[in-house]
Amino acid sequence: MKFVDEVTIEVNAGNGGNGCLSFRREKFIPRGGPDGGDGGDGGSIYLIADPHLNTLAEFRHRRKYKAENGQPGMGRLRRGKSGQDLTVGVPLGTVIYDANTDEFIGDLTVAGQSFCVAAGGFHGLGNARYKSSINRSPRQTSKGTLGEQRFLRLELQLLADVGLVGLPNAGKSTLVRAVSNARPKVASYPFTTLHPILGVVAVDETHSFVISDIPGLLPGASQGIGLGIRFLKHLSRCRLLLHILDISGEKTEELLTAFHEIEREIDVFNPELSKKPRWLVLNKIDLLSPAEQRERVQTLIQGLGWTGKVFEISAAKRTGTKSLCDEIAKAKFDEKEEFI
Image (cartoon, rainbow, N blue to C red; front, side, top):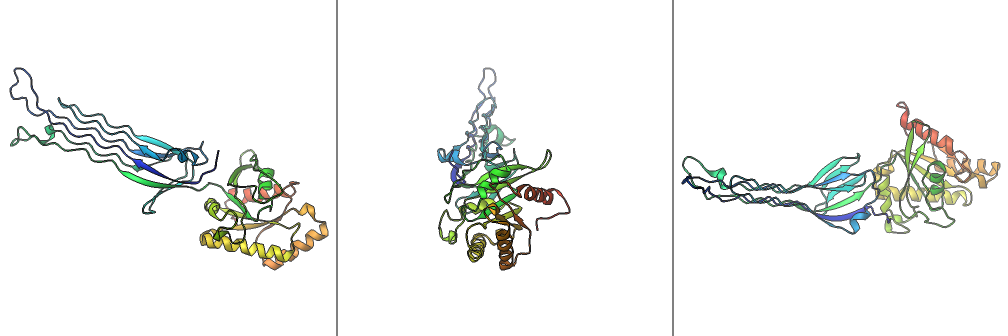
């Protein structure tokens, strides 16, 4: 299934049914009086968070949603049937905006959470509602109101504890495969990851966290180079970012330049995202000798002026990955720890 994380849909709630104009006409009851019933309410439209969905792809084929109209009232004070509400499932993490005004409407982050995006019309009143001591035979009724019609923009922001950023081929997908049951594509060419991948990392029998891999970034991504930065929004809910660097091949100066350029692209996309805690993960240490590894790591940390946590791993060999996951779990579940 194709990964779709942003769609525009039209929702039309049901109209309220009109009130009925009717008078009681029965044998031996010459002055039966008004008996027109009210109409039924129009159906509303709800979006509900469905944990079994992970993409908005279903909305590519159906863009319009219409709830049932309320039925008109009838004689003998019979009220019209109300229209049935329409419930539409969306993935967890779906943010709802008004497509015309960009107004924020709601954010569905908990399974089963629902939000009314279009209210059904109110029922019309029958003429029986208008009878009084001075108006014994009212011919007045009211029409049902129209249901809400809106154009909505649905934007999916994946729910994850940890997000991975870095250049293409830095080893992000390999790391996800090494620590979780997710199986993103891994190959020796750039951009094997074309859409975000989620993986659940089980640290022990009772603790786990969710890790998210997005397509690799390139310098100039904010101008559309590579896959651009459209997938960076999926990191907005992450509590921690891991900046993955491949230290096996490129020179230290090139790594320093790449690191600062990626950080700049993140800041251009969203300054708040750049303020998130992040750890530095140096990958592919298995391709260096111990002496080369020590020298390059020391030079890199000094060049970056890095004072945060640093992890040296080989995702392909799963060297150092367990200690990395243990530190993430400790920071997540220990109240005294923080992602710093």
